[in-house]
Length: 278
Ligand SMILES: C[S@@+](CC[C@H](N)C(=O)[O-])C[C@H]1O[C@@H](n2cnc3c(N)ncnc32)[C@H](O)[C@@H]1O
Figure 1 (cartoon, rainbow, N blue to C red):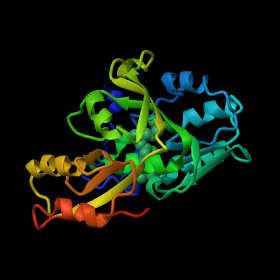
Figure 2 (figure 1 turned 120 degrees about the horizontal axis):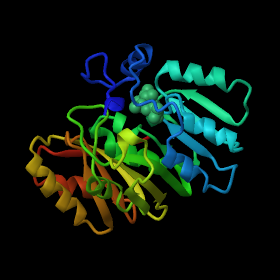
Figure 3 (figure 1 turned 45 degrees about the vertical axis):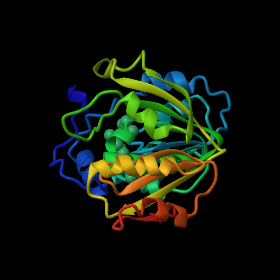
């Protein structure tokens, strides 16, 4: 799996712009396929509306965007936190009005998209950010919007990339998204064969998806109790808490007041909960 190794500098966090830029500068970009990922190409070929608003986060050198442009797609946005691939793409796509190339943090980005393409961005983020990823994807997608692409269905000794499993993703995306597809990809590149899930998730616009900052939780046992208590609130459909106990993703039929949430988690007086706003 040499194509998955990415670290030339130490893999110590934070995985910020400087970290990713260092990888590009040192050319330790083992994730870079040098071509559009075949399952994503196959999916793109099924998208009928060439005017669909498409976002590719953590785009890197984005052969996916290049492919979409060749197919005539006219409303593509790509964003990356590292300057090198962004400059490269800006030069390559100079004067092309069909693509917007942004240098920036996906989590700060605002917009509305019909389709967001996932290609080794989720696995590049610290796993504690997965709840935030789901929240942000839900915000950025228009009604009926689709999150499509690939997620690893295997673990790695260290990361990035950080792996995961179908079971984990099902728990994470439940209720916020409708699962149209989450199956083992049949045409991944050889080094990733049998280790990628092809996903097609439709935004559930009927629900409220909120992210909360938790404080005071230090034991993993508390997470189970907390999750159970939050799930028992009338209207709550799914709860996912990050591994560092800092973020809680809540999917509900309607907005739950912060007073209700605080009351529910006050079984331990140290625990506090605050809503994260944009
Ligand atoms: C593993 S690389 C994948 C690049 C590209 N998708 C590909 O498959 O070649 C992860 C990319 O995500 C970018 N990235 C990491 N965190 C980001 C963030 N918060 N916002 C935008 N881009 C980010 C990195 O700079 C890097 O280009």
